[in-house]
Length: 281
Length: 281
DNA sequence: TGATGTGAATGAGTTCACAGCC
DNA sequence: GGCTGTGAACTCATTCACATCA
Image (cartoon, rainbow over all chains, first blue to last red):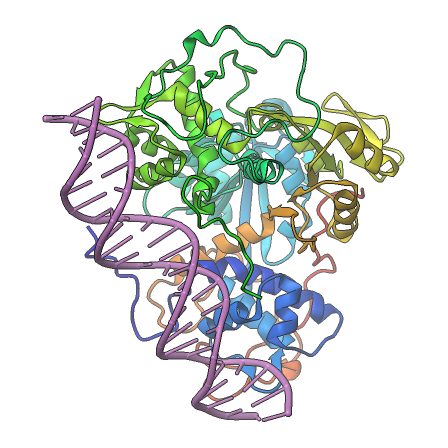
């Protein structure tokens, strides 16, 4: 362990940091806006502001792509648009399939951002036979029996999973077996994939929870250690006291920081804790 | 600039790294699953596997919360669930509003993950008068005129923006003015907010573009420097050769790496480049 | 002169590896 | 013996500050 990792330490060029890659689409969007307004050149300062990053970061990011700017002047908008598009692989056409056509899947199918910028919805797939044939966003939904055929016939290498959590791994396995090597996962599950397959995750409830964390901080501010009380109004809901905290999982005693006697959070809120995304697929 | 930033370097406890915070919801989900299966304790190894991280990272993450494990044994599931929930602020009730009830907004409203874990959809808001009163996910949509009242009446501090890009900043401003201090933004725009307001962004097209980048790499593998040719099939689309690259934005000449004569990407693909999310709000 | 491009400094996050405790 | 908790090493990312060049 820790020996191999061919990570291309080589000459130069190849090996753009992941953090930079993640920002390229942001720059691209900002540049596209400028391009539409026929702005010929931008400085790192201006473009950084439009993309919501700081200019030093932007310049360093661009330096990984090459020397595409002109000192004393800035960057040529059209040229940069092309270079970034090419770097991201958007100068070619990527057929994608969306699996799981519930609310979310339909939203994705209708999403303008899919159609533009090199992505093309090759098929919508759902496990519900009743959905089959029904057009969503102008594309007829196909039954998941045909998943493998669709992937192969269209040379699809990118798949989007918008199924409930329970179906996600299974769908993922089938996609991968059929040749998909990049997956965008909206289901709230950890997907297991073989090496060589990329998975990116978009998880609505996780994002909300992160916000809640920071929100709590704001409300609690200088409360030194105890869990701050409800910051916003609304908290009581009628039956809020669950059973006696008898089930309280014995804390490892020895002065654990920040709390006394955990109420064990008994009284399981709802049965749908696994956050089923939207519809069966 | 760069002086202030009280960032709590203090004694201990407060100051959980952002990266750790972002993983807590993941651990929580894995733990919830174990809890439902009545598993009493887990080792860092097992839990890490379930959450898709490595065990050292998990242990370090937990160490920021306190010493909640037992050496030689592992972690008490129920106890950890409570501690993480508390740390994330999920032991209280967070009313949220969703603005922009198009496909995506509806998907979010129906999303199980919202209802569980401390979040409660206080209202759905849309700018389309025709939507007003129509129930979505059992909640009547309200017109955006009432946005401020809704925020204040319900003590909402978290808002979700699912409007088209064009409306997002405006909606954001109104949310913030009305007292919202955390925003989850699904619109493909950079939002500008005052200090003290948190914004998290979920951007479908950016995620896809990042996948495309890696996908391209896989296909190109050992092509040393030139942009690899289309990996998947499907590439020609009829009229693919745009006008002469006359408009080609003069590259800064001097041997720029990796490409010759950028085709300037003339012939703008489609007019909907700004990726309007779904529906007016 | 006014911007880029980039080494060097700093900081954040991850991983290692092992002491400490059950 | 087994597993947590954590200093220390390391890797990755951001920021600074300035040499460099149109």
